[in-house]
Length: 156
Image (cartoon, rainbow, N blue to C red):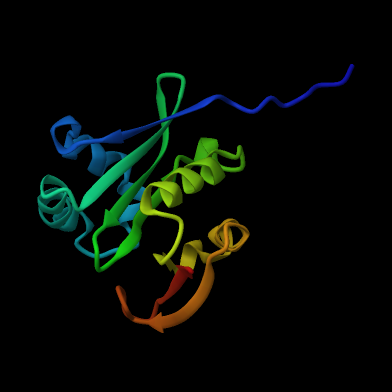
């Protein structure tokens, strides 16, 4: 008997500010938030404010009725950035990250997009980012946390 692993059907939705429960969002992203000091304050105040102004968006990846991952995006005339990119551990390696990255890049306009990655997550995200055309532009020690490198990627 041969077993085939089927690719899960993923649905994407973009959330508007009125649709977001920020306490649930903070809880979902708590693992990602540990890499960035004051993550909750940024989420509740900076991100929310700019989302109301139309400068930030959230793209959700759903498998069935479960949220599998999400991408927090900044889309202004000055900067296009994937601010937070997170896939639940149980969905990693399933292709959902690739699909969510495609959706995020497409929304931002396919070029001049930035993303930074914490040292602890760089080995995991490097293959995905480079396969999508991102390249490392810089590595800065202590950018967000003392003695920890932050990798700056760009898609030209």
